[in-house]
Image (cartoon, rainbow, N blue to C red):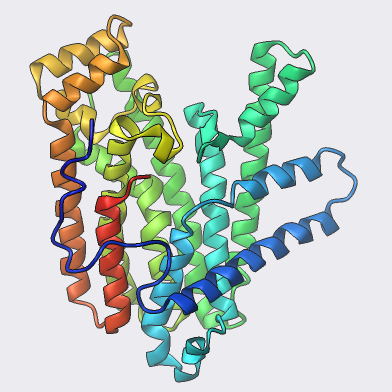
Amino acid sequence: MTFSRLTQPQHTGTAPLRDEAAVSGDHAWHAFREAVANELDSYFEGLGDSVTQSPGFPMLRLRVREQVTGGKLLRPRLTHLAWRAFAGRTEPIMRGETRNIPDPDCVRLAASFELLHAALLVHDDVVDRDPVRRGRPTVGELYRRDAQNVGAPSNEAQHLGEAAAIIGGDLLLAGALRLATTCTADPARLQPVAAVVFDAVTASAAGELDDVLLSMHRFGSEHPAVQDILNMERLKTANYSFEAPLRAGALLAGANQDDAARLAHAGSRIGVAYQVVDDILGTFGDPRITGKSTEADLREGKATVLTAHGMKDGRARQVLADFAAGRASVTQVKTALADAGAETSAVELATELVAQAEDALDQLPLPDAERAELNSICHYVLHRRK
């Protein structure tokens, strides 16, 4: 199965996102991302100074640190983008970033979102029982193997792995909140920025819970509607990944609450579209590219926009029921969903959400460079392969 619709040109008004580099200036973005990496290194190095008597802690620190590497740094990029969009209007001197000197407050806030992302991924891997993330063993899987290698029974090894991963996720979460609540010395900006981050953590917890509860449909309850799934995806991921970085970055730069909220609204649409595409990749993607299984969502009974669409088709609904009862294979489910038009419907939904985001962005007083970058991100969301 290929993403024929995803690889066709969509109307976004810009070229595809080539990589993580900012449309408004590759040098500025590369300098900023390097500063974020240094901020993260400083955080983890500091942990070694404060915790010195636990023999197991150095390995945990190393393993959770690895969870912060290899990503697209999308959340720091969005934080930086929103900050740039408003910094020049509130304090012209902040535009000193044009000399490729990243603003330290923005760097620290951006790093907090990357730690938050890593924390939630580590916890999500426990919830979803995923042994692989970005093509590498998860924190829990590494500890499970450790326990297995010393002779622990399989159930005890699994429990130890999950316990260690929960602890590691907590460590990352604490770091995210620490950086967010110390990102600026200006109390007038710190309070609203920190509130955004705390709200994002709360929303993600609620969304994760909804995701778990929505999967109960496989035990006989009614399959969730598409809107229920979209609401869950907004809470669980789109909020902390798109809405919050854009809102917090704008507020840190001195934007008023209305403009920050409008920017976050556009981010919400982009973020939910991102998750819809993630659903598609989670079922029809190439594991060699995505770095994760294309069977896990189905085996876990995840309610996605794909399965919601499939429930409207008689044959796909029967195959899904047979799969839940152990009478059909993953391959048969994928074929039935594709034949029912689930992938096509999901692509159309993602495209509509991105169009709504672009309409919202058109109403905002954004500089040309930052507007172009946001449009590029919209295009990337629809065309990404992993």
